[in-house]
Length: 411
Image 1 (cartoon, helix red, strand yellow):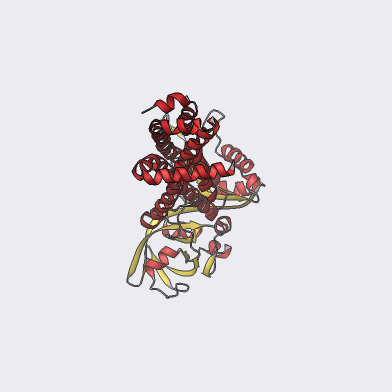
Image 2 (image 1 turned 60 degrees about the vertical axis):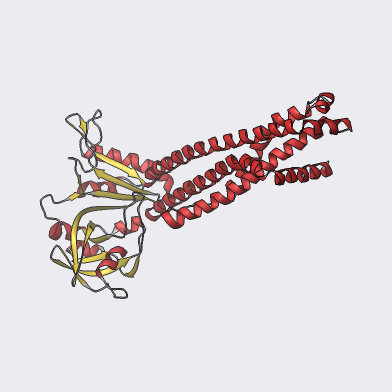
């Protein structure tokens, strides 16, 4: 049997070599389909890995609470609507929700930062010290904000990497420098480690952090003292996030005196929720692109079937001679099946190579991350051979069922 399969493979390769154009057209659909699948899955896997790394940069056990999302005049407002979160709300959450490991609050404003003859428009955040514990965000030089800084309203600042690059010369030490924000002098006490882009595509390093009390008293104005723009909290374990969210909702609804039939006047989000939405979007796009690639595979399979049907017609007399000298039907069947599988395998291998090249080109020229999986490559090869087997079955069966006498009379 092995000798027969070896001879069948040899004969098939010789036949394809004699008809390179015909064989090339037969595998074109398989090549395009497999190449598209490899490229699209690689892009999808790369996007998924990027989302996961962005979530990890913030932490999967982080909970965000924003003011807004209440119903006003029959219209549900978005984040930052008319509802408010107060510092008292945050302190109450810390006291009444035991599952919370840390609670921090913040507010932000776009301001101009100036150092020497350089200036940079940046988001300035007023935060409490626990903010950096929740975000698991260390410094690469200097130190973090302290409780003492918050209590006295110290004019100190932490800079993100992007701000450092725009305000200071390469190699210049930012720690200890005096910068001006809204004409208020601040001493730089630390430079934060780079975080990269957030899951929403924003540069997390293009920020300046100052003590919450300082921001409220000296930068943002005291029109609405004691209000928080956002609340961050974290749990000890990721599995506690769901229970903590329920407790946070209960406490805030109670403090805001919301009736049972009224919607929340705040919005709670977790990094897991944000990540799931983005992964689902990426997954949906990948599935759609794979569906398009599957059409190419289908066309390629039909092309292989047509080529083999033509081959059966052209080789009818040869098949009759072989049957007359003792060839069995199953041998004829397997010979054509082997030809179909070799065609599809060739298309699959070339498709894999092209798919890898396309994925790498996307990374180099477009900047999109890609991740090539060995398991996907193997499945693509096996699937392409399965296409050849499926679409080669009808021509092979037709050839094996030819009547030897009629086949010998065929011209």
